[in-house]
Length: 162
Length: 265
Image (cartoon, rainbow over all chains, first blue to last red; front, top):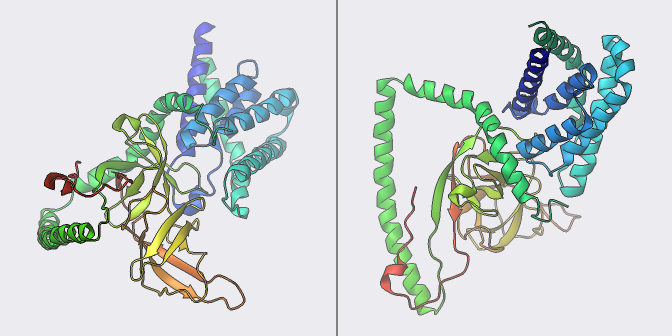
């Protein structure tokens, strides 16, 4: 039983690490503008799948690390991730029953909420002009959600059966 | 607010040490492909490159001879005018890490940090001109804001006539805006913009950009001018972090201190 849990933790850390790598992956300009928030997507999955393990505090810690990684205001992503993970925890029982398409809709609104918060915070501290392209990662993330769900569930089941 | 105070700098420095491996991991494949590409370069290519570099070095060293004489002459003339002069600069070569922090900002990460004495607001250059300035120095790496970032402004002057203005980043890598010049300003396409040294961050006289287009807007107070940065912002992988002493050195110094502080690599 104990070893099973450890396996799970490995999968959880490795996927988050991979997500952080994907988040800062150097891409051509047009692709990098589409790059979704991988860390948030994977956090949503783990919060829905293992809510007893993934809490708001864990999400906050991951957010702080992402803040340092991407050079943001310390606590910006942490706040966003904590809030999103709270809504996921609140609705996880219902969301797990939903078909994948309906889940995608929830993910869409979570990502949109996160992006709106980031938009507000960034507007306060900088003069960067945000165009409509700024919102595209939300759509890309939603489209990628079914794939992420399937892959991560495979990883989770792999960790449990071993 | 964290962006005004420095109280949380230690927390960020500590965390950045753990995050640095992630950044290295991401930039590793690109470095490896570059290395692989370099090892399979053919002999004749290398030979050609070697001869062309040798020729360039010869030309450059002759130019440098003249430059040294001119510099000494300049110092003597300034002494005649009872003016002050500035000491030379020290540089540190830093390599770019191939990571993309956020798509809507022009901030890059280099592999030299406060462990090498890099500190905030230091100017960063490449072989062609000013690249940007250090906005955050972490123990193992530092973040450099490029001059084309919309939040960045650099005081410049036209090399031809000394007209001073401010160049503001546009958010595009090949464009700087000069929004504060009137319609009758003496500035032409092709003019070289150099740093004016005002503001104290950037040392004086380094090339920044070349004016590309100057269009008069008849019913507006300011003209619409934009310039192309001299530095190869999207191509150079090696950047120079510069230490410059912004306070002018007074006259009447012994002969030794007139010499430049040598560049150490």
